[in-house]
Amino acid sequence: MTGELDMDGLRVDRDAFLREAVFAEVVLRGARIAGQLELGRSKVTGKLDMDGVQIGSLLLMGDAEFADASLSSAHIAGLASLVGSKVTGLLNMDGFRGDQSVFLREAEFAEVVLRSARSGGQLELTRSKVTGKLDMSNVQVSPILLMDHAEFADVVLLGAHIVGQLALDGSKVTGQLDMDALRADQYVFLRERGRVRRSGSERRSHRETARADQIQVDRNARHGRRSGRFFSIHA
Image: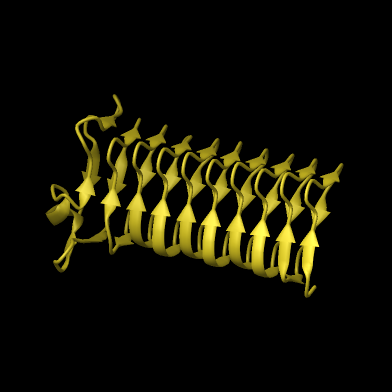
């Protein structure tokens, strides 16, 4: 489709399938879909606008390609998946709410905003790559945030609350990892020779940079009662 597919305010009592298709621009603002919405293996060359969308089951957007994708204030009752997808512009999930798991693994992103997002299952970015900023300020995840074996530039977890565990095992952060006021009720894992680039310096192991300003954890950051310590850091 060479023009805009405008489904602003759409109401669907069952499922909506837009898979394996090519679109110039898609508007689904405020749409209500009782079943699942699928855009698997599709390509949107312009903006995909899904702000405020409400989906009663699954959101499947895997193995797809998007320019800018916006899911600000979206509510997904089932799991949400962008596994294997590529977003060349901004992926905006500000205020996103997923009642189950949110899978962003094995994907490529230019910039991701997950400010104040809520995930009722695990939130996973395993083996993904974010070339720009990953903003997860005030995100709430229950139970696990998995960011292992991934590549990031700047990561912001300011004021984030992880009910279970946070794992960045084997990951690489070339910019700043800001964990100011992070609350993890169990463990935070930065293991298996992960790397953090320190400003004006060469890459160092987490063992060497754990006390540096590049990893920011202020006095308000709290570890869980079960953990006994805040970080598990293995070079």
